[in-house]
Length: 135
Image (cartoon, rainbow, N blue to C red; front, side, top):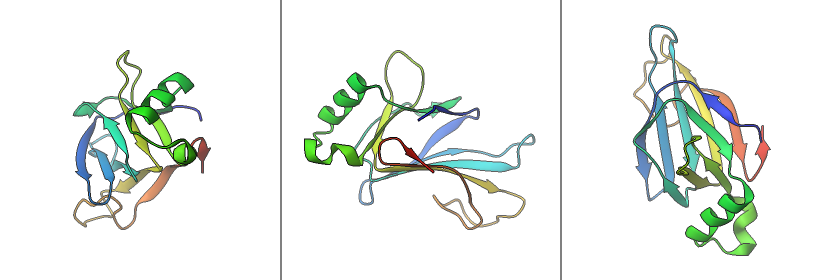
């Protein structure tokens, strides 16, 4: 997959162990009335900073991917089910190992509901599914 660059300031907004979901959020501003959420589902391993600007989602290269999968103790027979995403171009790899990742935009002029991972009126910008599949 081609790297996805989201040129906004993203913060780790929430992580739920019970549902294995990680939410990263970028607020709306005067230049852009949409806020952005990146929802990672079925999360198996993470290494994060508290914020990113920009946030770059890229498939991990094979040596890095293998290290991430080994770190998470994913059995060989299940490795094809997971995305190994790096989050920046820094030398120290930051990553999320998950089954799905979705980038959502919500127009703040139309949405007045509380911030949720997938609020009413959300528009899907990118949907990443299992290694390398993008819709």
